[in-house]
Structure formats: structure tokens, C-alpha cells
Image (tube, rainbow over all chains, first blue to last red; front, side, top):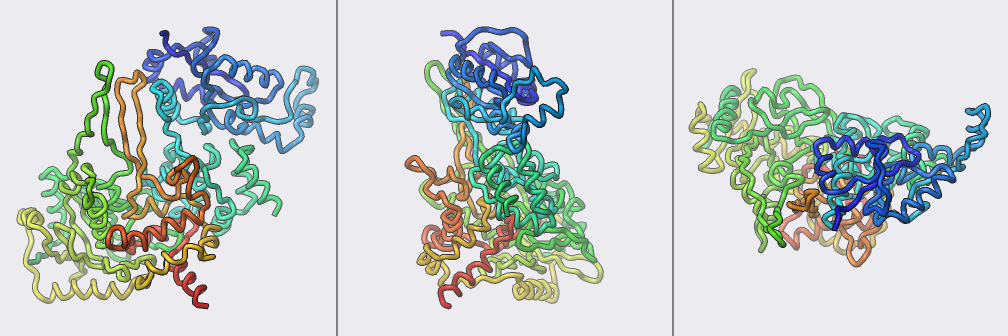
Length: 257
Length: 369
């Protein structure tokens, strides 16, 4: 039996999640030892044809060509892992979903002949069946390594869906909202980053997308107590995970009020 | 038996503990709040600082004096030191076609804490019951507890969210310490009027310069602590409370609280008695080794009640009700005491400031009215 093969695919994205994989540095040799890296454009021009044991997919679907390409990836892959906010929620480029994308094209390009893009940016799971989703902008390299290890060992990956607050308290970080009056999306954002931003005395900006339970109405009330207007909360919800259903619904609800 | 230390002698105590191989922890200002951190000297402690706490609010202000312990409890508690957020239970190494399992090596760390409060000692006593008192003993906790050394400080200036007097857990410590002290302002200086809790405590203090207090000093320390009992920022009527909560599972207030509750779990993580954990497995990429860890979890997380293919407590009100009724009602039946020690952390560190000492009287009024 040969080694399992790993392919890394890029769709509409900034390559930051692929860089997280490269950023594993001292673990890269272990990974290369455990799997054959068949396709990884950020790292190498080498390419091996499928089928693949695991495909890591970065980026969202924004063109008709990519909508076809992702189906080909699924077809050749035993397991598909969507990595990052673009692949799991449509990314920051999903802001176009709230606007007229044709108008953007007309404004930006003098002769938009070669522009063939979809009106929306959508997550991979809107197009194919996804086995595992890794949140974040970018993904946590610890989670990425854990998922690869879990798939190789046939165990459950450690992907908690509770909020960032749990990781803050585990780290002994005092709450930036309670002790600093800083706007923080931590209570409604999924854990997994290790509470990086609050540990640096900043509010969480929600790059891991909605936690399993999202009570934005209550958070909005608290932000107002801190002197932060609803408009700022709407903008905070409309970043990397603007199209994640729970954030999209919440920002629309606040705007409608 | 009792003793008095000067401030310089308190520092000697730290030195003696360190000489004995203890990692000494005390309340330190870190970022925006006080938390336990390892210290080498009392100079690192939160000197001249007072905490102002309220529902969903915490800030530090400068004191007019340079008291070392002129503040109340910080964001972390003894739980963080004796029942840490994550630790290994066992490891397994591949051995031919099978795996060889080994219990995790017991921690070698010997932790000494200076400045533990009576509510925290009460919380640790609850943990002793929960984690050591049953059929299955938490070996890691047991090792940490046996190796630990506790110097407690009586509270003389309770905070706005404190209600240990209601819970019978403070403001002075009755037991659970090796040494206990009251910080007193005397003639422009500071004295630490103390008492022994254990022989181990006595043995350590023998190596620190000290003197025997006179009756006046002992009286001053006692009256400072008893005055504090009358100065609590909050109170909670506990008589009949377990029965009330147990018989009002359908109370309309649960839904009202759930409108504000973020289900973020901060209350459970900051609580010094909440002990719920989940288990996580990790493995090396080549599959040669595996580790089984326990990590703090929360009854506010959906996964925590995942049984039979779905979370059993899907709504926020079900989760809040579970937490509060277990803490204040079910706990009594299960472990013989309330699960609350009145430290107020769940009130302060709730990002939206839900305060059950205010919610419960409202709930009771709604029934009576």
C-alpha cells in the first residue's frame, strides 16, 4: 500500500491558508514523510495526477470555471477539507453578494471582455460535499496539522465549535470587553485560533466565523453600552465571514431595525 | 497559635518557599486585570491597586496606600493552578501491532500560592469533594493538591460583586490553608497577623523571622475581617433556594435571561468550582504516539450535551438553567454543599453582565406577585 496522497487546491483566495501550511516549517518534513504531496501550487510547480486521499481546498467559488473545477477536485478526492474563511464562508470577496458585481466590473475594467465572474462568492460546501471545514483567516496551523494527523490516524479531529471566550479563559486572558471596554466578537465567534487577538489586548474580529450559538442582539446591546454604534457592529460582521449564514442574518437584522 | 510578619519578612517567606522547590504564585497585574502569576518576590504583586468590579465591568485603580492585598479576586482562581485548563491523562506508543498505554506522568510541580482568598479555599474544598471524594480519583489533581502550599489572605475590603458572607465561605478563612494572614495598616507600615493551618505551615514559618502578636493585634485583625462581612457588595438568600430552583424549571425568567445570555461560557470558565471537562485525542503524524487530554469544557457548549445524535440542551435557556440549577440546587444533592462560593466572578466576567444575585430575587418576586 502506498502512502496517502495530499493535494492542495487554490480557488479565489489570498494564499494565506496555503502559507499557514508552509508555515508549519519544522513539521513539514514529518508531513512529507507521512503523505505524498501531489499538488501544492504555493510550494511547488510539481503536479501528480489524482486520485488523491485528501484534498485541502483554499478559496471560494467566484467564476463559472471554478465551479466546474471544484467538482473535478471532489471527483478525484476521497476526502475534501475546506480551509479558511473563503472556502468555508465565501471570504471577504463575498461582500459582492450584497452589491451589484456588474457595476464593479464596469467601474474597474475599461474593457471587461475577459472578465467572466459569478455574481456571488460562495463557499465550497455550496457546490460539493465537504468532509471537514477549517475556519479562520487564515486557518490555524495547529488545527491544520491536527486534521492531517486525525485523517491519517482515523480519529476525530479537535475542532471545537464553542466561542473564543473559552480559549481566552483557558489562556488566563482577562476579557478585553469587560476589563478594557474593547469591542470584541469573541462571544459569537468560533474558537480554534487560541484567542490570539484578545491575548494581544485586541478585540476578536470574527475571522473564525459564527460560533455554534450566536446571540448578536445581546452583543449589540453590550456594544452600545460601551458606546459603539450598531453601524460598527454591522461592519464588523461583514468582513471575512460576511456571507456565513449566522453573521449575514445578524447584520441584515440590525440594519433592518 | 499565631504570628506577625513585617513586609520584609513576608518576602522572606517567598524566598523560603522557593528554596524548598515551590513555584510561588501570587496576584499580579497582567494586562488589565489581576491574575495569579509566578513570582520571585512580593515586589511583583499587585501592590497599591484596587479592583472595581460590577456586572460585566472590571477596572483597576490606584490606591491611596501601598497595600499588597488591597484588592479582591482576579480573573483566574486556584482552579487554574490545581485543575489546569488542559492536561494529559494517558499516552500510547505503538508497540508492534498494538499500542502500549501509559498513564500521564504525574506533575512534578509544587505550587505555593500567596494571597488565596477564603472563597477560593472553599472552592478548592468543593473540588476535593468532587475530584477526590468519589469512587474515581483525579490523580493529577490529587498530586497537585498534596504538593501545594497555601498562604491565604483574609479579605478586609470586599468588592461590589462579593457575597461570600451569604454563602458562608468568607471573608476570613477557617481552614484549607497552611498559613493564613490579615494585612493590617499599623503606624504607617504593614503587618501580617497570621495563624497556622498545618504543621507544614509551621515548619516553613519557623525559617522566617517573625514575632508573636499581642492580643490587641489579634483583635484588630479579627475586627477588620468581621467588619468586612458586613460590607459585602451583594447578597444571596440561600434558604429554600435549592428547592425553589428545582421546582421552577419552567419559570418565564429563564427565557428572559436567555435573551441576554451569549452562551459564551465565561461564567463557567471563571467559576472556581466549575469542573466540567471533555477529552481530546491527538496523534503524531506517523501514528507512533497518541495522547489523551482533558480540557475544560462548559455546560454552555452545544457539544457538551450531545447525546443520541443531537444536543440535549439546544436552547440558551436550557443551558443557562442547567448551569444555575446545578450550581445552586443539584450540587447540594450531589455533593452536599452549594456549588457557589460567592466570589462574583460569573457576574464580573459575563460580557453582558448577567447577575444571578439580581435575577433570582426577580424570579421569586414574579412567582409571589
